[in-house]
Amino acid sequence: MALQLPKPGILLSYIFQKLLYSSPRPKGIPLRKSSYSSSIGPKSKEFTVLGIETSCDDTGVGIVRSNGHILSDVIQLQQELHEPMGGIVPTLAMQAHQSHLPLTIIKALNEAKLNVMNDIDVIAATRGPGLSPCLNVGLIAGKVLAAALRKPLIGVHHMASHALTVRLTNKELKFPFMALLISGGHTLILIVHGVNHYTQLGTTLDDSIGEAYDKIARFLKLNWTKGRGGGLGEALEKAAFDGDPRKYSLPTPMTKTKQTKECPNLSFSGLKTSTILLVEKEKLDIEDLQVKRDIAAAFQFTAIQHLINKLVLAFEWCKKRNISLTALVVSGGVARNKAIRMSLEKTALDRYSLQLICPAPHLCSDNGVMIAWAGVERYRVGLVDDYTINHIPKWPIENLGSGPMQSPR
Image (cartoon, rainbow, N blue to C red; front, top):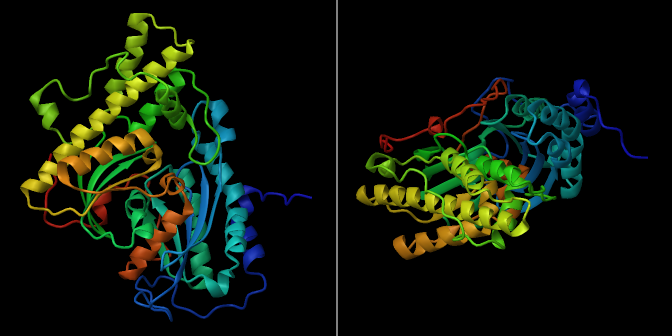
């Protein structure tokens, strides 16, 4: 018989019944101590972090060793829940997290063959940015686990974890590097100076690139792709692969005036509108499969050109200030897109002799491993949080810490 999911109201008690009922009460530090001093210590050679990700729709739990060994990577998808609604519904996502998280934690521990009391050294959980009700589920679970077990707690910035994930699999990558973070909720161009130091060079003024992909895919009546990393954005990418990007011409955003050309920020709302107007003006039949593919290809081609234009501005900004970058890192759910990767790789290598580095596709979309790894990075440098921290739905990444350098505005 399948194990019954817990009701939302008993989420935490369910976790402790399953994980802690046979464990002795640990001895530890006072509840509110923020500078954690334990037997392992941030500078010890190896330690193990359990990471919890619930910032949006999927429930992820990952366990990672500080040497980069991934012990488990478990994710509970919610595609079937949100697809009939046409998009993510925060309340439904929250309720799914409440039901799925306890069993996802248990599955991750079982997969890693670890005991939460004896083998997990640090608990990390996404603190923000993201959907407020969803963030709250994962952070509360992380806080209570850490407090009960007297383990250090790390509240992780979701976008910082995307930026740092490449250092999990590319141990030699040094700071500073350029990061383009592209997802369903965010589009950011950053200089990553260190684990807790970021300079934001550009962000979207309206829709994120992932949001624009989703809206055009929905307009073209594309079906969601299934599985991890799937959805409307991947459906558009697949349609564009078989389309002709030159069949239809769309205006590249922010190229009409000198001011917008030189602005480091991005905008995808106009491109979305131009695509819809093209179909209406030309009376294109989007029920025709090849028309659908050609429109998708034209949209994607123009979106990529917009990304390249703004990245070039960012590279030139760094060049004028003698900032020696080590690589271009592209991460986030949209970074799974092969056409985007190939185009950005060519730009970085041909124009700036920089290597493009992306996480493995399964680590681009939201997951618990990236939260655990961010926990590793932050714990190494002594960045530990109080058990009393709250979630932050809107959390500018520069608030993590920045130097005197001013980003272009």
